[in-house]
Image (tube, rainbow over all chains, first blue to last red; front, side, top):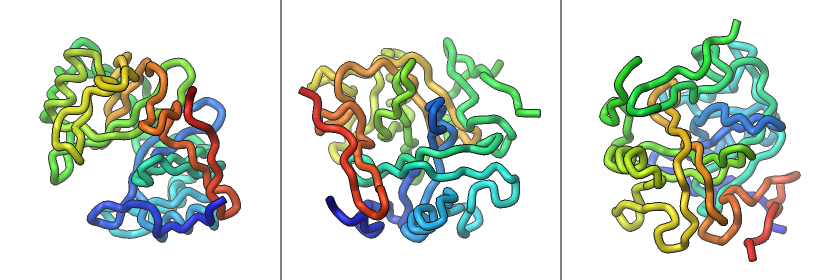
Length: 120
Length: 120
C-alpha cells in the first residue's frame, strides 16, 4: 500500500482539483466543486467535505451555513490523479437552489428541460 | 422551455467544460473528461460521447480506438452551467487502464487502496 500524499495529486494552474460528490447508496451525482491540497486534507481529517470557493477564495465547508452538510464516506482518486470522487452522505439539498442535485437541467431534443423542483 | 445553446455554457480560460460520465441504471461514476463547445455539439448530434483531448488537442470520440464506446442517454447541465453530467451506456472499460471506472483508488486511513483490477 502507498501512503496517501495530497501533494501527489495533479492540481491545475490555480492549485485546484475537481471533486465530484456522489450520494452513498443511491449513486446520485450531487455536484462538482473544487479543492486545493489543504481542502483535501481538511476533508479527510474532519470527514466534512470541504471545498475551495473560487469566488470567495476561501474554504467552503459544505453545509456550514445552510446545514446541508456532506459527510465523507470514501474519497477516491482517478487514474490520472487529476480528479476526485467523494462518496458522501448528503443532508438535504446539495444545490444552492435548494434542489437535491445541481444537475437538474436536461437537454432533450435541443430544449432545456427542468428535471426537479426545489425541495420544500 | 429554453432552446439549448452550447455557447451559453460557461467554459474555462481554455474554452473547456468538465463532463462527468455516469452509467445509466447502475449509477457508477465512470470518468471525468473535458469538452469544448464543438464536442458538446458533436456529442448531442452523434450520441457518441465526444471529449476534447487536452494532451492531443483533438476531438476524442470515446471508444473510437478501444471499442469502449459511450452512448449518450441524457446530457445534463449543472446550476452554474460550468459542469456537465452525461448519462451513458458504457461498453466495457471506461478507464484507459482497462478498469470499469477511473476512480479505482480509495484513501483509507491515510493509505491508498486499489478497489478493482483491470477487466479481462
